[in-house]
Length: 104
Image (cartoon, rainbow, N blue to C red; front, side, top):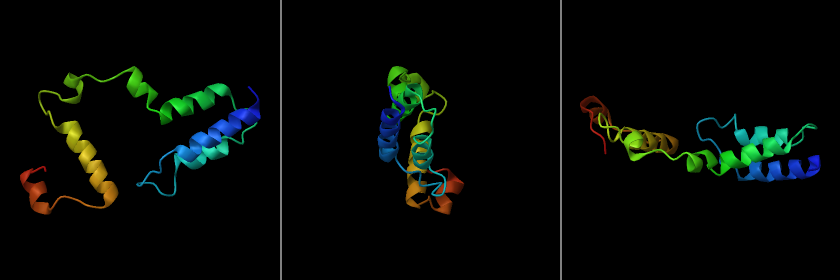
């Protein structure tokens, strides 16, 4: 495949990449955009970026319920995702919920 087609596809992937709210000055989107101008860009690099964008690895190797909800802490990963999302929004738990270990 021609390098220009690869560059065009990688630019499309970079445009669709979500922004990282925790690192506004360091975005994977801008890295992929600059990588599309590289003279030795390969189809494999473009394919890898596309698979990452579409969560291809997660679909190819799905995690079992036993892994996602371990017996010792069944809500651990659910709370981790909630904490990440709340942090991205700028909200946090009140101090008394942190002290007493209360999760909503």
